Image (cartoon, rainbow, N blue to C red; front, side, top):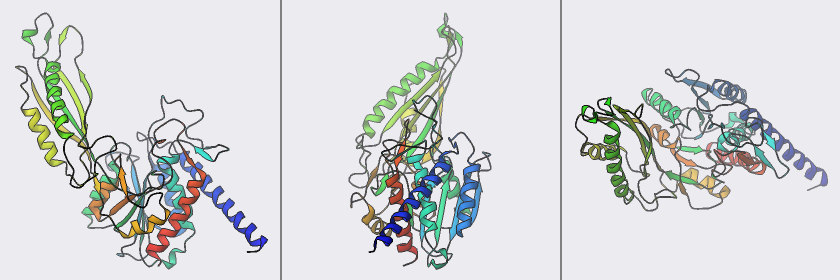
Length: 400
């Protein structure tokens, strides 16, 4: 290679780094905390990918204004190509000790790019913009579908809505599905789900000088919590459908009593109390049987006279268990830090996307260990690697 050629290659690499960093700076500047709209970032992504040659669809949430999913498609329809997927929302920054504006990208001398969402997971969105820009979409032999969702951070609501909508339209997505969560370029093929449940206790208020005239719901909740603690110990011994499917902190099904709210004043017998709890079904394990066990546990509680309870499933984020040895896994292995796929300790949109034909794998730049923290960051070198990986994998799957 001549000196001139080497210089040109170096210049192209520098341009690539600058462009992907610029895109990340734009994306993190949208303050898409989950209680805010995502319409502005959705419009930006739609415009950019439409300019590359993608057909754009937006699936608005009819109940929650400002919430939308963006689906971009290119290539021959009804061909089993690839899905690239990520969420547009981020977690809050309030109360965290950030050393600068969380929504203004800062680059350190060591290559760290600091901002909310830099790792989780707008870095993957920025890399997708640049990685797909390097391809001639007119040469696609299989379809490329981009799925950008809302409200992943608060229960994967966007992907759940999208999966229901696509299923109602009898639409399937390609089986190869790459979810670009920050895994440090480790391939993950499974994770637990998450089910949120609220238990409401009803009783009778009375003056605390005459407690016999009332029905104390806080006492009722206490008895139920004790029973749930016993159930939690049983579930921690629960095995999954295959070896090594537990999270990094539990070998069984974790159950967490998360918060309790009851009573209004110290001199009033409380007539209302609410308990919220969550549990995590193991990969490949449905949640319905566990909900029935939970309800049976609550029904068996000996409540104080005059009190009653009712329970409601607030949300369900499905678990994920993708089979080993998929074509996407084969394409990702050369780029991975470990050849054998592992288990994520957190839930993703993958569980919902399996309902429309996907076999998701989780793989992306950055570390989940810095996600959700102050001064969250991704390395510029990781972004550059992700750009090259996206180009390579999409070319291998859809243009080979």
